[in-house]
Image (spheres, rainbow, N blue to C red):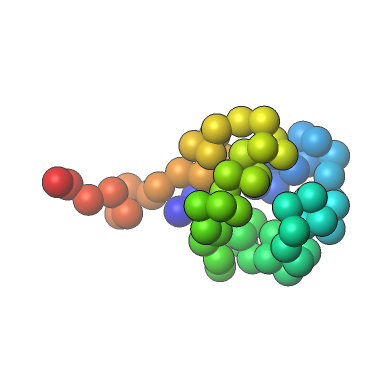
Length: 70
């Protein structure tokens, strides 16, 4: 999964620590998400959506290899 979390955070001029505090996780969690080492839960993704005031799809995107044909 690709993400634009770091970009969206920069647009708001927000540090990893500030974002982490707003959504109730550690700064390390934010860092891991930004570096694609951790995929956030649905609840965490929705909290991020509220902070950025954008749909989840605006900052998280599946890569082609993750999209399976049905």
